[in-house]
Image (cartoon, rainbow, N blue to C red):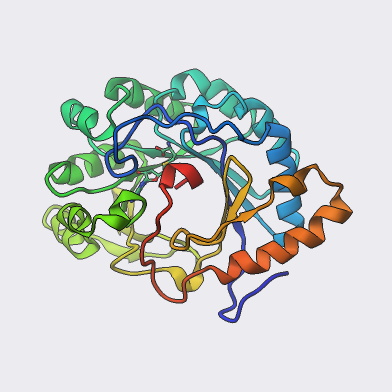
Length: 322
Ligand code: SAM
């Protein structure tokens, strides 16, 4: 097993199935142009082999399928069926939910039991201005269908000053009523936001402010979370849970166990590092040749992790998956 001086190792793998997305969220894409799939994206079979090799070489236990938007990818079915055979403890999927109704039967059939769905507002006009694509009513309908189908749902919201702060409490109520766990994700200095410090600071809302807003309406206490969890979890007694992923306010680099594989075959050990390591060519090689080379790259990827805190990254989240 590859372990660093701080005792960190890779346990959780996030695979970006495609860089293509049907949204162009303001904090993710600077120019509003939706990203399309890269010319050199790996095939579904190569990506399944990549996951299999990484389970062996790095000790991956849990997989999250993300993007771009994974539900737009033609590789989705082959990939999910393939990774479903690999004996992982947990496979979940992150999506904006736009195509959820249509893809739900496939997800259920492929054994997906947990979804992280991004939803920044319940206001249709604000939704259009943040996501720059999609339709709110369709997303909400898909979420309800997934709930009825018995999937466990976490909802991701990025609070943005001047855009959706009035939605913190309505979204929390909406999620509590449905048994969804709302996760507030502090805005991260990624892509254009890493270059535009003022733009970042104008929009950023930190955990203390969020908790104060919630505290005016609800009493809550801190709840247990796994050691390498990114979110701090809180319980509102009798109502349910919510979480805050506080990249800036309470950095979690010291316990980070995440590894990312991009749709074009690059390994990223840290969102805050511009280093990446190409493994696409190894995935066509037999196991005995691929694993030693992969292990050497994993040592480098683990070395890319920040010691203490996330300090920003030039990479766009859509490229490597959130
Ligand atoms: N398309 C899928 C979705 O919308 O969930 C998966 C990919 S998206 C990049 C994954 C998550 O990253 C979303 O919840 C999104 O809100 C979040 N995200 C993207 N850019 C971010 C940023 N700069 N700061 C914080 N969260 C960000």
